[in-house]
Image (tube, rainbow, N blue to C red; front, top):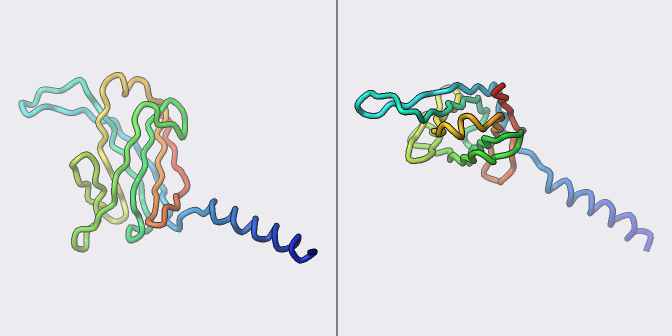
Length: 145
Protein backbone atom coordinates (compact mmCIF):
# COMPACT_ATOMS: atom_id res chain seq x y z
CA UNK A 1 0.00 0.00 0.00
CA UNK A 2 2.87 2.41 0.75
CA UNK A 3 4.27 1.74 -2.72
CA UNK A 4 0.95 2.78 -4.23
CA UNK A 5 1.10 6.10 -2.38
CA UNK A 6 4.59 6.70 -3.80
CA UNK A 7 3.76 5.66 -7.35
CA UNK A 8 0.54 7.67 -7.61
CA UNK A 9 2.17 11.13 -7.13
CA UNK A 10 4.95 10.22 -9.55
CA UNK A 11 2.47 9.18 -12.24
CA UNK A 12 0.42 12.31 -11.64
CA UNK A 13 3.51 14.51 -12.08
CA UNK A 14 4.53 12.72 -15.26
CA UNK A 15 1.02 13.14 -16.63
CA UNK A 16 1.06 16.89 -15.92
CA UNK A 17 4.46 17.29 -17.58
CA UNK A 18 3.07 15.71 -20.73
CA UNK A 19 0.41 18.40 -21.04
CA UNK A 20 2.78 21.32 -20.61
CA UNK A 21 5.33 20.45 -23.27
CA UNK A 22 6.62 23.19 -25.47
CA UNK A 23 7.93 22.75 -28.96
CA UNK A 24 11.61 22.42 -29.78
CA UNK A 25 11.05 25.07 -32.44
CA UNK A 26 12.24 28.53 -31.47
CA UNK A 27 10.86 31.78 -32.85
CA UNK A 28 12.54 35.18 -32.37
CA UNK A 29 12.78 38.72 -33.73
CA UNK A 30 9.14 39.62 -34.26
CA UNK A 31 8.65 42.74 -36.37
CA UNK A 32 5.36 44.23 -37.53
CA UNK A 33 5.01 46.88 -40.24
CA UNK A 34 1.87 48.67 -41.41
CA UNK A 35 0.95 48.24 -45.06
CA UNK A 36 -1.56 49.90 -47.37
CA UNK A 37 -3.21 48.13 -50.27
CA UNK A 38 -4.02 49.55 -53.69
CA UNK A 39 -6.55 48.27 -56.19
CA UNK A 40 -5.61 47.25 -59.75
CA UNK A 41 -6.01 50.84 -60.99
CA UNK A 42 -3.42 52.03 -58.48
CA UNK A 43 -5.91 53.85 -56.27
CA UNK A 44 -5.15 53.48 -52.57
CA UNK A 45 -7.84 51.63 -50.66
CA UNK A 46 -8.70 52.77 -47.15
CA UNK A 47 -8.22 49.22 -45.88
CA UNK A 48 -4.73 48.63 -44.59
CA UNK A 49 -2.98 45.79 -42.88
CA UNK A 50 0.13 44.50 -41.22
CA UNK A 51 3.18 42.60 -42.39
CA UNK A 52 4.27 40.19 -39.65
CA UNK A 53 7.86 38.84 -39.71
CA UNK A 54 9.66 36.42 -37.40
CA UNK A 55 12.59 34.03 -37.53
CA UNK A 56 11.94 30.32 -37.05
CA UNK A 57 14.55 27.72 -36.15
CA UNK A 58 13.09 24.49 -37.56
CA UNK A 59 10.80 24.44 -40.56
CA UNK A 60 10.79 20.66 -40.92
CA UNK A 61 8.51 20.13 -37.91
CA UNK A 62 6.51 23.38 -38.05
CA UNK A 63 2.79 22.88 -38.71
CA UNK A 64 1.11 26.27 -38.37
CA UNK A 65 1.66 29.83 -37.22
CA UNK A 66 -1.02 31.40 -35.05
CA UNK A 67 -1.32 35.17 -35.08
CA UNK A 68 -3.71 36.79 -32.63
CA UNK A 69 -4.55 40.42 -33.28
CA UNK A 70 -6.31 41.85 -30.28
CA UNK A 71 -6.92 44.51 -27.72
CA UNK A 72 -4.73 42.61 -25.23
CA UNK A 73 -1.88 40.09 -25.34
CA UNK A 74 -2.95 36.50 -26.12
CA UNK A 75 -6.32 37.72 -27.36
CA UNK A 76 -7.54 37.46 -30.96
CA UNK A 77 -10.66 39.52 -30.43
CA UNK A 78 -9.95 41.71 -33.48
CA UNK A 79 -8.68 38.99 -35.82
CA UNK A 80 -7.23 35.48 -35.51
CA UNK A 81 -5.04 34.10 -38.27
CA UNK A 82 -3.91 30.52 -38.78
CA UNK A 83 -1.23 30.14 -41.45
CA UNK A 84 0.09 26.74 -42.53
CA UNK A 85 3.72 25.84 -43.17
CA UNK A 86 4.12 23.97 -46.46
CA UNK A 87 7.07 22.55 -48.32
CA UNK A 88 7.29 22.63 -52.11
CA UNK A 89 10.47 21.02 -53.33
CA UNK A 90 13.28 22.33 -51.15
CA UNK A 91 11.46 25.59 -50.34
CA UNK A 92 9.18 26.31 -47.40
CA UNK A 93 6.19 28.65 -47.44
CA UNK A 94 3.71 30.15 -45.03
CA UNK A 95 0.25 29.77 -46.62
CA UNK A 96 -2.67 31.99 -45.69
CA UNK A 97 -5.82 33.18 -47.45
CA UNK A 98 -4.81 31.76 -50.82
CA UNK A 99 -1.32 33.32 -50.72
CA UNK A 100 2.02 31.61 -50.22
CA UNK A 101 4.82 33.57 -48.59
CA UNK A 102 8.28 32.09 -49.17
CA UNK A 103 10.42 31.62 -46.07
CA UNK A 104 13.96 32.76 -46.79
CA UNK A 105 16.87 32.00 -44.43
CA UNK A 106 14.41 31.10 -41.66
CA UNK A 107 12.57 34.43 -41.92
CA UNK A 108 8.81 33.95 -42.19
CA UNK A 109 6.55 36.81 -43.21
CA UNK A 110 2.87 37.19 -43.87
CA UNK A 111 0.60 40.04 -44.94
CA UNK A 112 -2.69 40.33 -43.08
CA UNK A 113 -5.38 42.68 -44.34
CA UNK A 114 -7.17 44.75 -41.73
CA UNK A 115 -10.05 47.11 -42.36
CA UNK A 116 -9.88 50.58 -40.84
CA UNK A 117 -11.90 49.57 -37.75
CA UNK A 118 -9.63 46.56 -37.10
CA UNK A 119 -6.54 48.72 -37.68
CA UNK A 120 -7.77 51.30 -35.16
CA UNK A 121 -8.95 48.74 -32.57
CA UNK A 122 -6.00 46.39 -32.11
CA UNK A 123 -3.22 47.09 -29.60
CA UNK A 124 -1.28 43.81 -29.54
CA UNK A 125 -0.21 41.06 -31.90
CA UNK A 126 0.66 37.68 -30.39
CA UNK A 127 2.56 35.15 -32.52
CA UNK A 128 3.41 31.52 -31.83
CA UNK A 129 3.98 28.33 -33.82
CA UNK A 130 2.53 24.87 -33.38
CA UNK A 131 4.64 21.88 -34.44
CA UNK A 132 3.42 18.62 -35.98
CA UNK A 133 3.02 17.13 -32.47
CA UNK A 134 0.69 20.03 -31.44
CA UNK A 135 3.32 21.44 -29.08
CA UNK A 136 3.63 25.22 -29.17
CA UNK A 137 6.54 27.63 -29.06
CA UNK A 138 6.89 30.49 -26.66
CA UNK A 139 4.84 33.52 -27.67
CA UNK A 140 6.18 36.71 -29.15
CA UNK A 141 4.37 40.01 -28.61
CA UNK A 142 4.11 43.26 -30.51
CA UNK A 143 2.62 46.36 -28.89
CA UNK A 144 1.30 48.90 -31.41
CA UNK A 145 1.67 51.84 -29.03
